[in-house]
Amino acid sequence: MNKEPSKEELELILGEIKTFSTEDNINEIARSVKWGVEISKIYLDINTDEDKETIEHTYYARYFKTSNASDYSETNMERYQIWYKTNGE
Image (cartoon, rainbow, N blue to C red):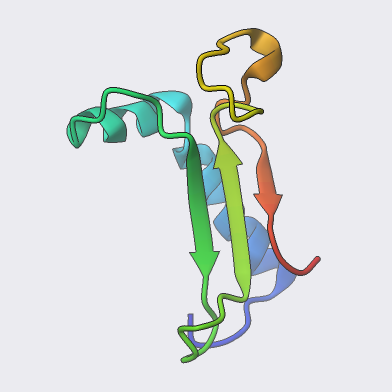
């Protein structure tokens, strides 16, 4: 982006990525590049200026709640449904 988005714009962008990043869609992406496992984390970086060193808004969602990728119990699954902001707010 070439300027700082409003809070509403950020919410709209995040809403769109949440809609797209279903377990089925992300698994289809993994299959299309012939990865045999789930993608553990997906990221959304929004840069609002020319400075490529600093990303102003960074979010991520994960497949598993923990680093244990062999634990498929429901208590260890997020399936990209929870998004976290890693900087700011």
